Image 1 (cartoon, rainbow, N blue to C red):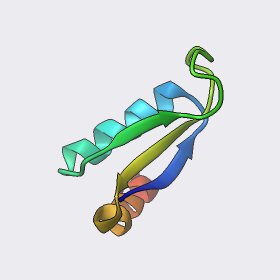
Image 2: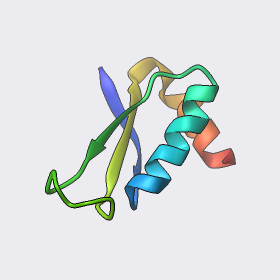
Image 3: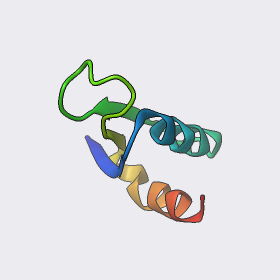
Image 4: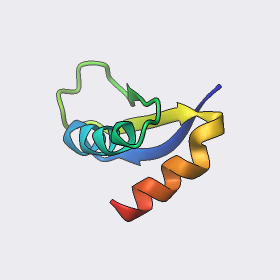
Length: 63
C-alpha cells in the first residue's frame, strides 16, 4: 500500500525529495494533485510503501 509522506508545493521540489529518498534505497512515486496538466506549478504528493514511511519521514526532515 502506497502512503503519502509529503506534499511538495511544486514538481521541482518533489523531484528533489524523490532523489534524496531514492539515494537511500526507498521506492518513491510522485502524483500530481489537481489538474493533470497544471504545468510544474501544482502540488505533488510524494508516496512510499507503507513499510518505509518512518524512514522516508526521517530523511525528508533532514534534507
